[in-house]
Length: 415
Picture 1 (cartoon, one colour):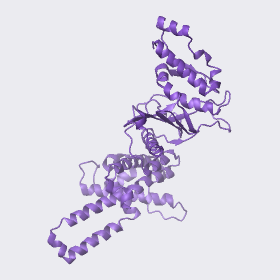
Picture 2: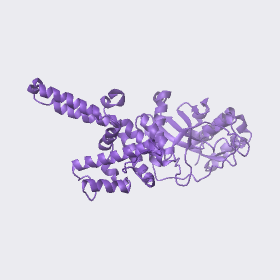
Picture 3: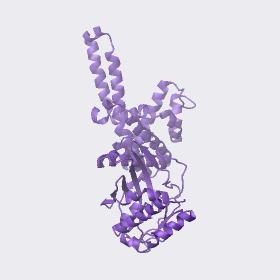
């Protein structure tokens, strides 16, 4: 990149700001300051300046920064405010230190693509953040040749467009939790809040290629709700039974809304009767009967069946069910396969069968005792991997389904 005099002076301004904030960085990076003669030479020769390489304490190599990105960050560098070891503020950015549950080759974090935009902000997942590296250096959380101040950390950055767009801390945290849910749903990796810290325990070599992935960006963030926390917890768990329970909690949490929707619709139909019916005793009693029958459906089994019927695309997810469950459903409703042309009543039956078996499987896991009586309908242990793939998708869709519901159907209203 060819820089003019003003841009080169801006680079000097940024480097001096870094040195003022972290004097120790200046000890190994004094050559980064361009002299007046050097600036003149670069401009006259039209030299290409590819980037800036900074040496951070404890690191084994220089860290490279694109020169245009560095220039854009100068004002942010000059306004760093360390709230604590996990949260950093600048004029227009906020940094939340996080860690990931999985760095294996199976699950590679694609730092440069896990971003999303909203009104007045953009959220990014960043490795080797200049500002985080500066703060870690300022906090002296490093050890020569063993623990650096920039490569060990990843952070979620909220970049605001203007100061007027800056959210409250509570709103920011809800936004971050929504983002963590989207990352978990998209790449199957759970991010958790962490801190800048030089560990006192034996260091483990954190390796693995950080590569570009196929995901260009995350979806627009959904408003935060507690189901997202259950979902992210499930992503982190290795034990397949416990993972299943956490996904089940998502469906269970939102299932009262599904029952409430059905109850409201049935009651509205009931009240659409001719006005003369309201003077009939049998009609009045039938309203109470309907209300009582819907109240009776607020039991664990009927609630989970309601979620299967209402909260997610059961037909679309049917192929993801374990083979034994698919076979049982197709045999019960006497179809070769389940698709969107399947009779509505048969689809309802299929949802109820699946919900019942999932409920019984949940009971088996919760009551894991030697004297627990199995019914024979439970999912076999060998099928938990497959079951959890279904549960993950169903939970994700349920969380998104909930956000689309009108205010009068939100949980805080109907409970």
